[in-house]
Amino acid sequence: QVQLVESGGGLVQPGGSLRLSCVVSGSIFRINAMGWYRQAPGKERELVARITSDSSRNYADSVKGRFTISSDNAKKLVYLQMNSLKPEDTAVYFCNADLRTWSGGSWRNFWGQGTQVTVSS
Image (cartoon, rainbow, N blue to C red; front, side):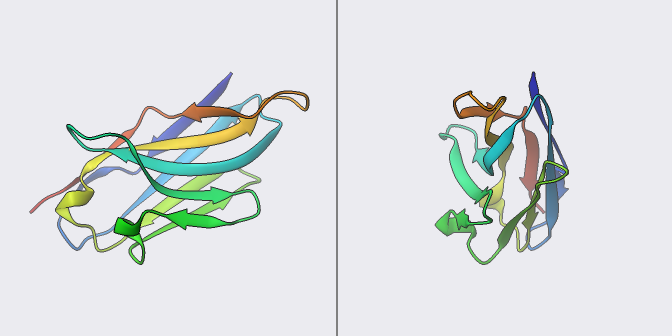
């Protein structure tokens, strides 16, 4: 069984910073990529940032220059450093992992439960 657990969400004022963390545990053979998505009320879930096993990164245009994704593959951790936060960044942030649970398995997608980020004065 694979589990993703996020932490680090909360309430922050505009212009502030937060750091999200996500740890992946369970039966894992190899991780292809990990990422962060977010979903605001009434909106669809969207990609925020993604990092692959070879450290290739991509970001949503709306967060470029403000957010940074990083990972510790040995510890199966992924982080999202969020700076210069704006009210429009308010959403539930979900951790995502694309991985194989065994050598002969197919790549599968797993999700965390989400952590609330609220940017408000």
